[in-house]
Length: 71
Image (cartoon, rainbow, N blue to C red):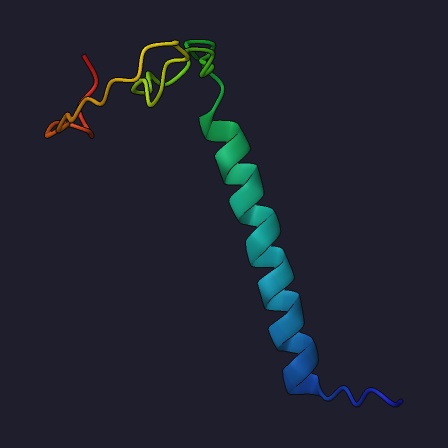
């Protein structure tokens, strides 16, 4: 397989690589403050109880209307 490069392609690749490098340098220079906050999602999502193992044979019907809201 042969790759054909002309001046226009070389300039386009060069401009795109230089643009990416400049954007990384700009992003790095903007983040010089040490006022960052480290966060993590260690809390588990509260899930409803779907079934409980019991010896009694009972049926319960419930409706959860606010399923997307956390307490």
